[in-house]
Image 1 (cartoon, rainbow, N blue to C red):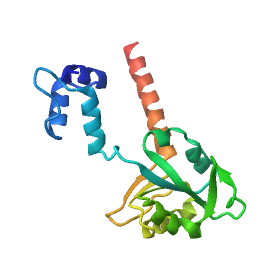
Image 2 (cartoon, rainbow, N blue to C red):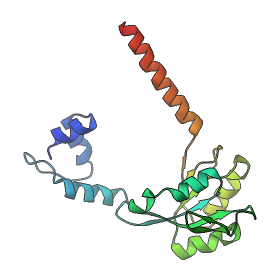
Image 3 (tube, rainbow, N blue to C red):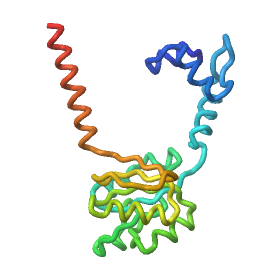
Image 4 (cartoon, rainbow, N blue to C red):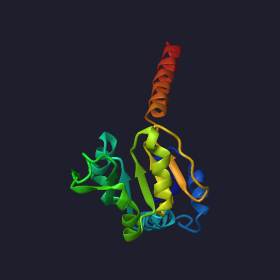
Length: 185
């Protein structure tokens, strides 16, 4: 596939594609383009997506159950190896076929499966304590669905998913599109 075709499919120029991919070394051949399968394989390697990533999920409320039920994780290399909660009514039940474990088993599960990624779907009051527990157990990346920003050492990556911010962004885009449409009239 040529850089022109790649650029067109991504809404970028062929020069942008060549420049960006050149940062990762020689991935294509001038005049011949890129071997798509080889390019995908190399990009997956560079992003750490050529390996399996065991993950744990903490908090099995509505969001936690939705996350554990999401079927596409495994096909993309993310395997949920443990689900945890503090609620005694939830511990021992199943979520998407996984037994919900007490938080007291978090550290052992993370160590046994060499877990580096954790997902938090907990109330804001528990967010920092859960983040601290995940970090103390050895997790170095947290996907945070709690409605609160948490702090961590610089060696730990945190990505927060804030539904309100996403809805605000969407509302702005819809408003902007309507404003531009009205300006054309």
